[in-house]
Every structure is written in C-alpha cells, then in structure tokens.
Image 1 (spheres, one colour):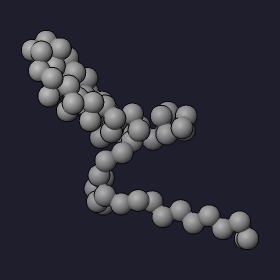
Image 2 (image 1 turned 45 degrees about the vertical axis):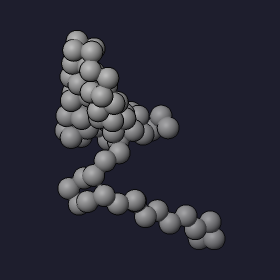
Image 3 (image 1 turned 90 degrees about the vertical axis):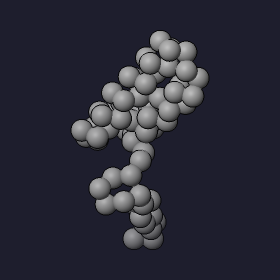
Length: 68
C-alpha cells in the first residue's frame, strides 16, 4: 500500500490531484454536494493511481509462479 501511495507520480497523476483539490474547494465554497463526489473521484484516482492511461484501461498481467 505504501508503495502505491508514494511511487510513480507522473504528470497525469498530479493533474488529477490538482483537479480533485480544486473541485473540493469549489464544493465547499458553493455548497454543491454533487461536486464533492466528483472531487472524491479525482482524489481517489490520484491517490491510488487508478484510471485509464494512454494505452487504455487494463489490469496489469502479473504472473506469480512459485514453481520457478
């Protein structure tokens, strides 16, 4: 978990974080409850490094063979 949070901070991840912070500020300022959900969505993507990348949405294919 610590590795997910503190590694691989690429520019798109920083952009998601900035958008999330901006939307959360706007949600509090204008008291828009729905905008808070949008902000939470962007913040979740930034913190946990989820979302679609340039090559599309896919699950990494890690093969865990203990026999080798």
